[in-house]
Image (tube, rainbow, N blue to C red):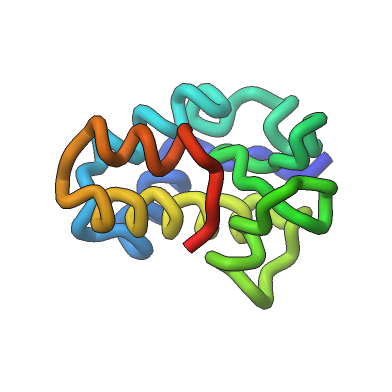
Length: 116
């Protein structure tokens, strides 16, 4: 298992990779998906092919969609920093595409699972 990220590290990644996305939104997703990165199970792939504090989907892990590959093409799916960056980038992208609508964001991020 990879080293777990601290909530402070998650916040730093969010500040760098999603400066125009509400930190509360990023925090809500990361809390829901992994307890802000404190849930050890988040660092091993699940049955859907998701991994990391943001539970980003990866084709490398058997997921139907390759969100990890879309948001961190040269990343290592077993590196929690990389999976978190990919998840935060996806959150930011979905927020931007939603036009600032929480309902729109929710449908994009949690609904269809499609990539960029």
